[in-house]
Length: 211
Picture 1 (cartoon, rainbow, N blue to C red):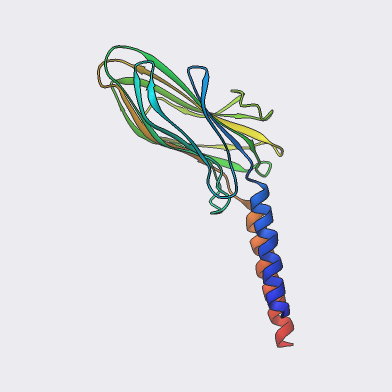
Picture 2 (cartoon, rainbow, N blue to C red):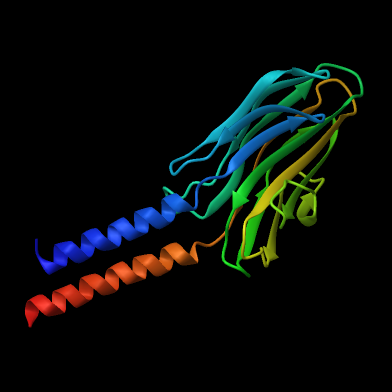
């Protein structure tokens, strides 16, 4: 095998190993204090979802997608399908979506967004970071009661941490509805550095071949 091919294979192996090692998060969906769905993330895409009637609300689809290092997207958490409605009357539902065992470079900037549609309901949505990695509501990093909102947060810890989205929905009449897609992501400096190392290796190999 040529030096060029050996360098490419070695760089790809290091990159793949580093990406896979970051993706062992646990996902939990909790409704009104009870865990209703859990999953362990892997190096592709892992999700937990729940569909049922709960406390007068029709939970048509509730899906949390875990960290996806396979695509090197930097995405930590994506609650990509929030489709909840109520038939009638004033009632409240609380939802806690948790992902543990996350890592990011110390001081990295987390960026997130809340988006969706709200009807006949008062809704609050919050993202929380917990440096103890236990899923506690320790540090609020973004919250809104509006349909759409973006935020950023500087400085996740250097070790393992957890993220939580906490949602409260109170129906104010018939046909209460929350339909949304909330997410949070972080740059991938380690992956970028490895890609740079791979490119440097390729350049070095190319120079060796030309010499």
